[in-house]
Length: 496
Image 1 (cartoon, rainbow, N blue to C red):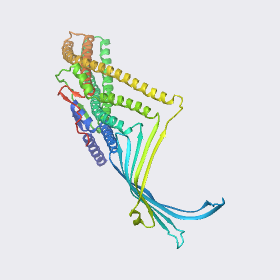
Image 2: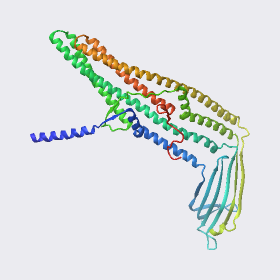
Image 3: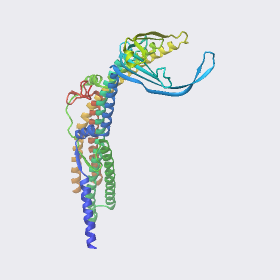
Image 4: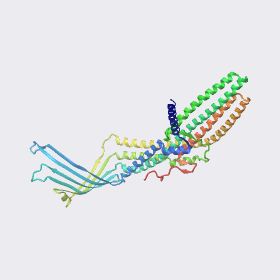
């Protein structure tokens, strides 16, 4: 029996040892946990993926303006059937067909961006096989175009390539700035979660200390009650305070666990890790000028590029509506062509092949359709201008408000820090005076409440300050503390 007990005890100790090792304690400052979130959090990985997707979208747009070499054709197209053939006298004969057709074309295509046309140089070969040919007939025939130059040129039409050259660089530049903004947004979000956990941690420390003090007060009151210097109602009041303090500890521990899980999940940290966050008591000393903040915001933010893109897109919609009023297209080709019984012969003395056509589609009576389309595009352009102007005004006001709030929060941090020290010292003095019988339990409770309130206010003011700090960085893409731009157009993202 003792042997079994020793075995079970040994296993329990081993499991306990592994459990302690699994609960790794990791300490983080605010800067360290932000850096980890930017490098390893799922949100940062999603932002990296979106950045890469936008980069390749931009490279796809650029490839439209490069020469494209294409090989296309049919290899083979075999058919075996009885086809109906109308005779000269109107009767129908059903003739057996057993044949194969194959063709290949190699073409070099180039977009003409300023005009929206397409120029191509092509070479093609076709082969026809009649498997029912008699001995006196040739089974195989060849047709070839050694070289052919084609031009397809829309006239007075909407030129997508011209407008894409204006819009897509804006879109790509906007996406790069959005990526930096997303990184700063991650900083702001993880700062909020950092302080939520820190406040829960502070609440647990406060609750634990209050429980310890309440138990000490209970012992004092029990001693006084035993010698008859206090009343039973005061003793019961202290006992009730101890019970409430224990409930507060349990609730604070639950809140801290919940905040810890949320933070670890966001930054991609193992659930078995125990976090210990260090309060950033020192705040950086720098000044923020409102006018400079507004200038940096319009210089660096993606919104500034977005406004340009939206204006250009509105202009493109007007141009597209104008180009749909009537349609005209010039198609021209020139080259050589020859058919022969041998493949090698089609490249010997080929014949000239030329084609010129001008297609036109002009609505004569459309009951105001073109006018309505054009008016709608212009109205949308005007609406876009109004919306952008209003957004600019709102954006300036937001920057102004955030900067003023940030400046006020600096003073608030200093005030709450001093208040925290004063309230903590006052409670210590009140507790010593209570021990000597010079302060009532009610006055001591008031001092404790003031101590707890001012401690929370100090941590909350630090939270609001750092939240405003990273929010200001996100809005301006500028680090006012280190005095440098968080984004410049020549920053390396992926190879351009």
